[in-house]
Length: 227
Image (tube, rainbow, N blue to C red; front, side, top):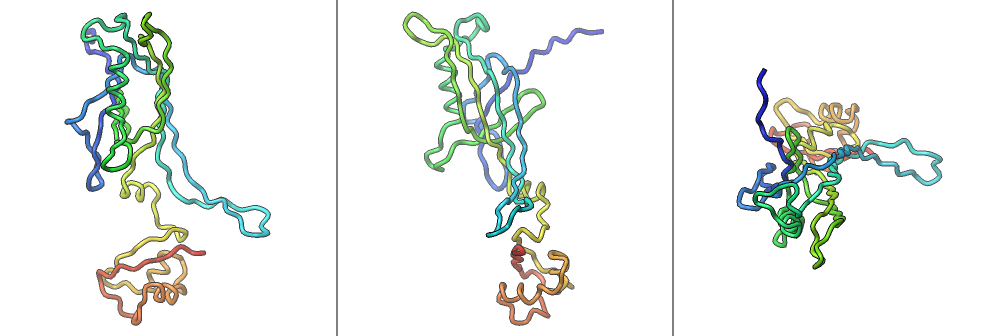
């Protein structure tokens, strides 16, 4: 039985760019690599519900609203500048924090924080920084920090296509667009979306259709949520 000589993979945070519903690592930007892997991480996945009550209503049954982005929290990420952990290529705590800030920085051109990829072994997460908590625990006589403990919170990124697939947006409580195909009729589409073909007159009015009996393939119709 052989002994593995592979190095333990370190957590990394890399800057990303988003275009055409895709997210990719921006290799032209710096990458932050953990000196010591965090003690753990937390993933939070949630679903949003509409709990609005009407006037005089005693209680309201929560109705599905949307699938929320995943949240990620990295806990106890230690940065050490004493040289105890890593002797070769040692960086100061200030340098490591500046690299982290450069990766997660606010993009002045887009007026929003940069997208990042968090990678640790087989775990991968795309999103943007939400909070950075830094606890300095050791200092030089000059006051320069020698050790810091970080907690990072991220909000996930999800493309519109992925969001639609995850939510399976065919519910009558959601507004969506439908492209007419050969053989489609307005009552048939209303039956498919609302489970009731009688809504066809209202949908025709909303879409300004004067001849709703003959729908041309390729026509895009708006089907509003049921109120």
